Image (cartoon, rainbow, N blue to C red):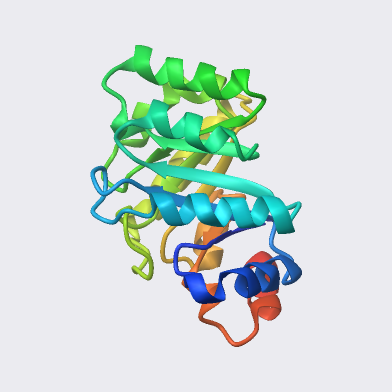
Length: 220
């Protein structure tokens, strides 16, 4: 059965504590923290996500799933390690070379945190293969990173499938997380392709019944 990581990107400040509580009671597995710096992607959510992580550390025991969409990865890793997240994911495209990417992996692991690497829709999935033995998760972006509420790009389904086949063929223990435009109508495409962690934001937060939506995403 898949796990559900609820993106809180669209959660409004004035409703934050109530919405975060309602998401947790709806049965999600993780809070997905979308950290953007205004450089790697246009929007800047850094301060808001730090604020939300502070809320969550005081009101929740749920695991934090931190997704860094930033240029200065090392700096942001250090900023979010203080919240003791379950996993920190950075973008492959933010790395200048393999040495830098391996350094980021090392820093995260040394702080007893799992490591994820994310790839954009146009990045060839083969570019991630060399890192799979050293990480815990690949986050496949099923939309262009940076904005919530986009429609899932069909071409990314084949990428998930190809990655899943490679992981199984090589007996690797790596989760596949899919993020972007996933709702109860298309979630099966993503699951059947091989994703075992589903990121969903507005599909949950804009629904009338968080619990029912989470249940449908998990079991539909």
